[in-house]
Image (cartoon, rainbow, N blue to C red; front, side, top):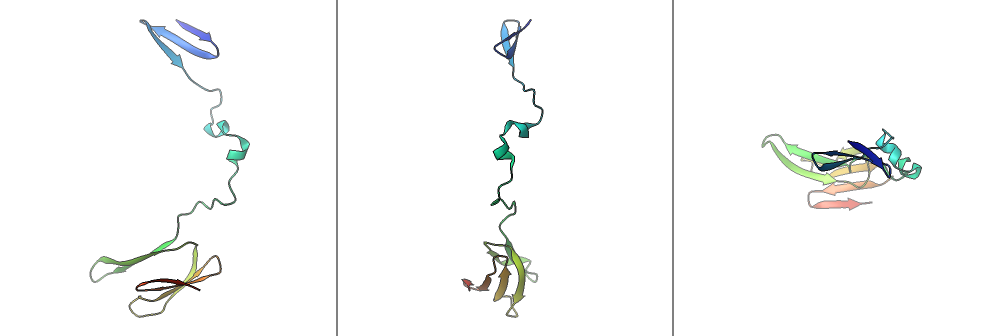
Length: 104
């Protein structure tokens, strides 16, 4: 026995009342307002950039560095990769050494 009251369908089977909750709109994105559907100008949808350097003789991670902006180009300044220079998308140059990072 199915009844419809207040816009919510219900069904009673063996004394157990079940409510059917459904929407006429099939697309879940249409539930959001138009303001929420628009992509944000700040939303780049990329992960924060990072670099990982591995020592292949030992099969281990030597070090990893994390950045605030996307890397455009890089240069290795030392033979053992302990000094690196990165050109970032925000027009900055990041200098990384064995002990940390510097910004110029």
